[in-house]
Amino acid sequence: MRRLVPCLAALSAIVLAACGHTTSSGAGAPPSADATPGATAHAATQNLFDARSFSNGTKVDNKYYPLVPGAQLVLEGEATRAAGRQPHRLVLTVTDLTKVIDGVTTRVIWDVDTNDGVLAEAELAFHAQDDHGNVWNLGEYPEEYDGGTFKGAPSTWLTGFRKAEAGIIMPADPARAEPPSYLQGFAPAVDFIDEAQTSKTAQATCVPAKCYDDVLVVDEWIPGNPSDGHQLKFYAPGVGNVRVDVPSLFPVQPSFRFSAAHEWSNGIVAKVIVGRAFQTPSALNTSEDVMAIGRGLGSEKIRGFIDNTEIFTILKDAL
Image (cartoon, rainbow, N blue to C red; front, top):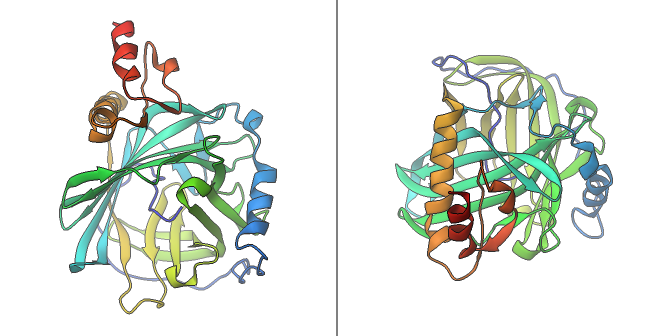
């Protein structure tokens, strides 16, 4: 997925530098052109997805993409926006909430994105690990803000709704990933399609939090849209995404570095997320179906998209 996504474990912060060596897996060669951009990766990815193979999908312990409930990752850097070069901050939290999507119980991730201290996006993402060790992306609910004011969530997608399909966030064995390139999600109703492949393995990198060895580099792009360029994401074992670079396609390269980690109690995380999920403008102030999550008594009624007027009835019946 093109947005930064969390995978983390609690660890200490503070070291600043840059380092690296160039041992490559050889998996980073450009994929062959498809008659339809992304078609080969699309078909190969869907051949691997089986909703019956998620016997314990919320236990995500992939080497490069662990999701520990209560963990929080902070990535900081700069990005070019309409107002020019601005400080950019991403706070990524793994909650203890779950949501059933297309028959798969997923872990709910909370991603808060700010530009120069002003809220730009708040996203709920839904990830699960299959019995083979692949981590899948089954949907995203990204609320968009302009100057801190809520504008909508037009890019929402969930697997099984409006022809949306799950994608792979992290293969079980990225060094010899099958297929060589894969989709991270496919949602034609909102024009979402991201492709990725392993670029390099056994790398070293330093970020403000710490220096890491055995780092995996993943190349991400939008098929058929060369003007959008590529993102290179660096994954440290046992931690997750610690660095994001954009190659020199753009005059100024946005970059993000892992700066700090925190660990919250599950109860606090769940309380914050549930409160936010039911109180966002999109959940209360629209006449359209909304995406909602919940936990506890009655939460089995909250799946996929529901009429926003049903939320009150579900809460009332649970009291």
